Image 1 (cartoon, one colour):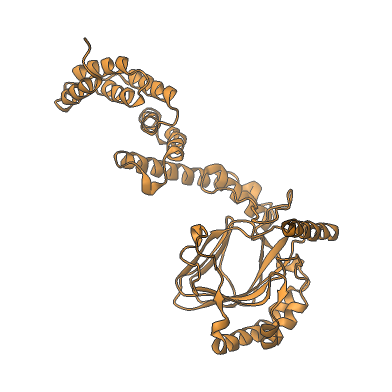
Image 2 (image 1 turned 180 degrees about the vertical axis):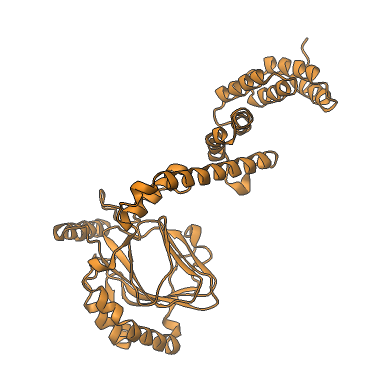
Length: 387
């Protein structure tokens, strides 16, 4: 009568703890015959084979475990470790990357595998950094002939190839216009109204200061989810005045009282061809971000419109990221971007950061396509109004 599986494993552990690896291997091979579909026992067999000097056998045992479960994390890590020992860290990096992809999020890494996963993460980072530097050097000559915006695109392409970056597609929450180029920031020069509104920065800033000092209660939390709504990344800012807004237009509706209190801002915005989409645009607001506040990565409602920031008050240590492109705000210089691409904001200073935010049409849409945006938005709204 064969001994129970647990007895075999316990006896093998005892032998291994005393360095009797041939004995431990024989017991584990017997356990494997008793439970041939258990990848954990195969990994114990692989360890014993390594300790007895049979590297080829170790590799075969690991592959056998992966044949049973291709996502078995100990086997994925062991396969990467063998590649690192035999062929070097460059060869192991793709295998470590596969293991990390199969692992749970880092805070949930299994205690017994944390060391191996942390080592693998370091190898992957080293590989990506080395490859990106190599590509930068190799491509320097052809890249020197590119325009600045083209050079930025191919710099990002190298980072993607190296694994130092990820792609940032357009992902709209409400209306996704397909086959529209996903550009992060747009050149201010392509918008004829840009210089005029930039020139109005001092007057707009003065109006912000006046309404903020007099009517601070009208600066409402920008994030306002109802109780019981999953808030995900917005938990820290939900109903928080750390990110507050004062609307001049909201979801297409003018805020008449606020516009009366900000005549210079309202007049400047009247010269802008703001996007008009029923129930969504135009929007225009003063956006105030409190010191040491982070607006987490998120996506906007549609790529049919662009979002414009006119920076009014910008202390040091404030940054804005859209996709792979990060930039500081500069007072009086517009940032025009596609907010359907993942974006986030940081105010790591000790002072308030303020921008005027408003919507404009995406210039990649023709006038007829703008009409289609209005039509599909109106039809969607009417569908939901049906009984």
